[in-house]
Length: 198
Image (cartoon, rainbow, N blue to C red; front, top):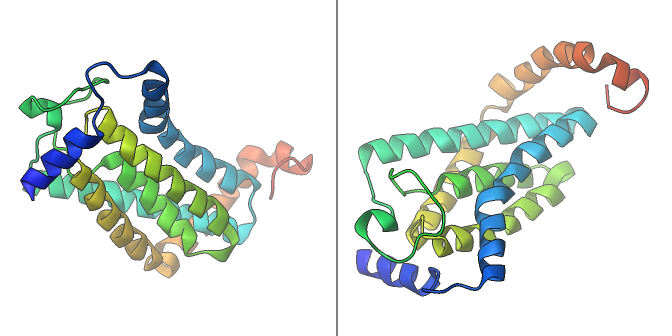
């Protein structure tokens, strides 16, 4: 399995002299698309109705669970990144920590898979899930992850979304009730102007 992981990595990883447009796309996908997650959740909360906001809270739980599971996994099993063993080409700086699973993909896909369980926000969930595909390629191309790190991210993301589903009654809905008075107080003027949902 390790031999396959290395071979697949070298097949996807950037060549000696990568084309600048490809590097630009890889950096955009691998470094900056992750900011779509907080942007989507923030807009979903500010502009959404009650059920959309609850879905955003649940997706947030899924993302946090995924990242916590990744910390646990990396504590139990440290797997070096490609550049830590002198493999391939690394195009961006990165901490020399455990590569498995990919935190970027885990967060993105955990949120996406959670949103996909709600009919009202399935479209943005699908969009995020699809964005994860070029992100997965980019993290390997840029030299900071192995292909199997992405497989691990899928598994953790699915588990995290399922765990988040189980928190609806005990955590998500009470959190929604607690946050709404804060929301109304913070955004009262914008709500009264009709710019934001109450």
